[in-house]
Length: 154
Image (cartoon, rainbow, N blue to C red; front, top):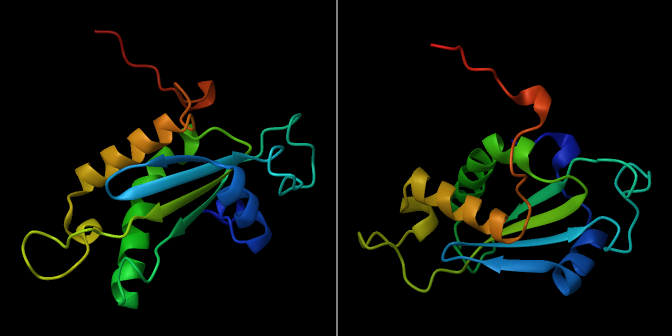
C-alpha cells in the first residue's frame, strides 16, 4: 500500500495529467506524469512546488478493459504497488504520476485466460516499471545522502 501522502486520488488532477502529461508506454504498463507546477493546480500541500520538495503522488489504474474480474484487477494493482515500494525513495519529488495497466492484446500463453500482468514474473514487472520511470525521467540517479549506507572496508 502506498503511503497516504503519496496517493493520487483527486479527479481534478487526472484531466491535466492525461491531456498535458508525459507518456511512456511499455508492453504491460503505461506511465503518465506531470510536474505539480505544470499541472495548473496547486501542490498537494498548498506550498509553492518550485520551492519545496513534496513527495510525488502516484495512482495505479487498472481498467475493466484489462480484466472484467475485480479480483484480477485488484491483484494487478497490488502487484504493481508492491514493485513500486522499493522505488518510492528514488522517485523525483513534485510530480503527479499515473501508472496504468495496458489492455492485453493477447492473454497469457498458458491458456488460462488471465491477463499477462498476473502471470509475468516479478522480475519482468520490476524491469518494465523501472524502465518506464527512467524513460519518463522520474527516477533519481542515486538515493538521498541520508539513505546511503557505508560499506565496511575489507
